[in-house]
Image (cartoon, rainbow, N blue to C red; front, side):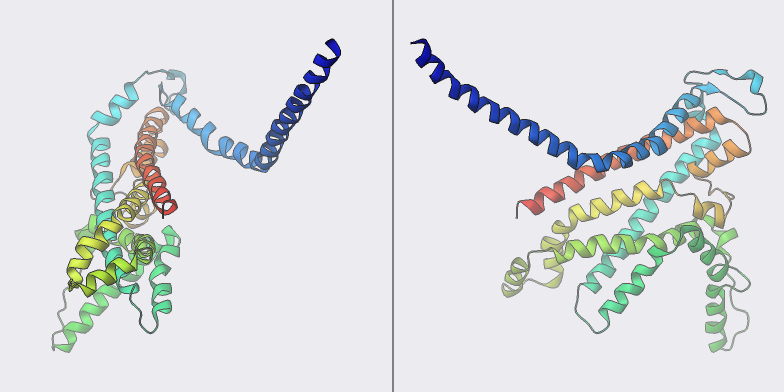
Amino acid sequence: MTTATARISRPGRNAATPSLNARQRERSLAWARRAPLLPALVFLILVTQLPFVATLVISFMNWNSLSPDKTAFAGLENYATVLTDPDLRQAIFTTILLTVSVVLISLLIGLGLALLLDKKFIGRGLARTLLIAPFLVVPVAAALIWKHALLNPTYGLINGILTWVWSLFGSTAAPQLDLLSQAPMMAVILSLVWQWTPFMMLILLAGLQSRPMDTVEAAQMDGATPWGIFRHLTLPHLRQYLELGGLLGAIYIVQNFDAVFTLTAGGLGTANLPYAIYQTFYFANEYGLASAAGVVVVIGTIIVATFALRTVFSLFKKEAAR
């Protein structure tokens, strides 16, 4: 009986051993796949998370580099100042206005361009390349182009075109626009819209090319008008792509510094929160207050990024369900 029991129990032990070995092999393979990513993860933590933790710590301190002996713990005082100081509150309002305006205008123009590029015509590839080009320009270079080549009141392209058009009608007194001094916020918005419209166009064009064309063809055979197809089929299909473009654009534009710094240097009511942080840190030398304002920007960006990630995941699930 004992020998028989031992013989019967051995297969059980032998069956459990391969199962344990298989699990160990799976874990080893999983770590082997993850190991090449560890250096990148460590680098990302060192470059992004540790500076943010340091910024978070400094944001709770009353620290002015001109008076280092008065450095002390300030609690939430810096955050209260960010929300109550008139200049910083104006910077927050300017940031919201700039972000909303640029995102909405870029989405509308990008949608129109995407609808045009979705049609087949001669030279479509060249047109697509030229329309994408502004997004590939370095932000500072793009702002310099708008400041000197386009908006300059003396030799800018816009005033040059106005002078030429007025000369066609025999008039030499052409109106001279100076948006940088007369409407500086509009100048900043125009430069950012020019740069971010191609980004919106690419996202919406990808959405248009993923439409189920059999539904569109069925609607056309049933006598649906182009406006009806766009309203009831195309626009609902593009809803998530519009949300994704808007959220991703907002994440980047809310942190924009280049256009404001280059075009207006934050003057005439164009100082957004990133530029106000720059002024607070480098000119007022208020490290604690600047860090608190930076944390506010990061929190706002994380909130927007959370919605963007949800939209991306919903798009992936929708594509996987097809």
